[in-house]
Amino acid sequence: MLIVVLLPLDSEVDVSRRSLYHRALAVLAAAAAFGGVGIGGSSAQAAGGVPTPDHVVVVVFENHADSQVIGSSSAPYINSLKSGGAYLSQSYAITHPSQPNYFALFSGSTQGITTDSCYTPGFSSAPNLASEVIAAGRSWASYNESLPSQGSTTCSSGKYARKHNPWFGFNNVPTSSAKTFAQFPTDYSTLPQMSFVIPNLCSDMHDCSVATGDTWLKNNLGAYATWAKAHNSLLVVTFDEDDSQNGNRIATVLYGQPVVAGSSSATTYNHYDMLRTLEDSQGLSTHAGNAASGKDISGIWATS
Image (cartoon, rainbow, N blue to C red; front, side):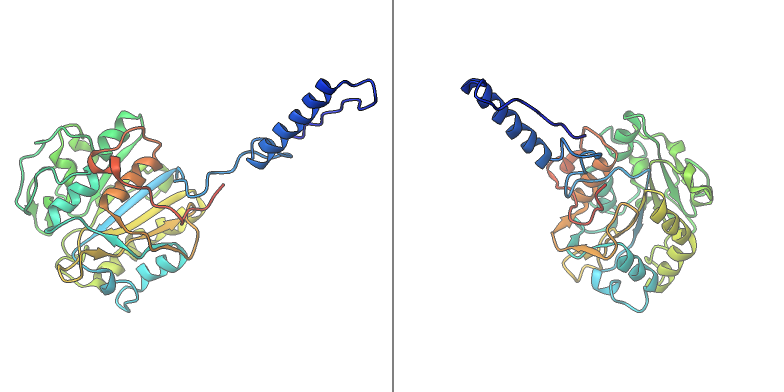
């Protein structure tokens, strides 16, 4: 929108009217400079602001350091996502072993969990990503490879382990929202607005190699990643923890249309910061646990 102010500037205009005229021009100039007034345009997204993708899919792998994945010939697909997406070079887990890290990423707290032992389902009513998403009227699901059946709370079954599925610890998250990976949609437009994908103990690199997990990701979510690039959607690939020998620095890559291709950030982030960013990507007004004092991931987002 262009606004033009025309006032007569002959000798009959008194000083007060001249002052009003110049003040009006100053206000318009300032508004234009901040994007509030322009020519045929609207305000751009704030620099560094977290976008709101139509769909976010978070995949969590197991027990490998950043240096064992990024730049490794065993992980060509993850490294292709890094090249075409965004890379957090200083991404860190919270603790050891695995299970408390999943609770930290999901709820901003380890919830008192210190081991990988099987816990009582629904032991906590603390706020978490799923409960916040659901309360906001948005959609949530988890897709868990080798889960015996939708909503099953079994501790383990074959290559499935509940220690990697923190949503079962919360009585404010419907168990029915925990689906098998076979239920992951082939029509990606029907995906929930927020979802987690948990590979089984082999596919997640826990019991099997980095190459095995990398191939699983390509075969099972490569098509989604390609689709996300053109459909305002986001894929997050991260790890629960490292191998206890590298300071808990983990590989984290983001890929999709909201991300600047080939971007990176050397800012230090952890699971609480990732949770904060996921919450803000959903436009949530609350933040669970330590995410409340966390910081948004920045410097990698494409602006509107």
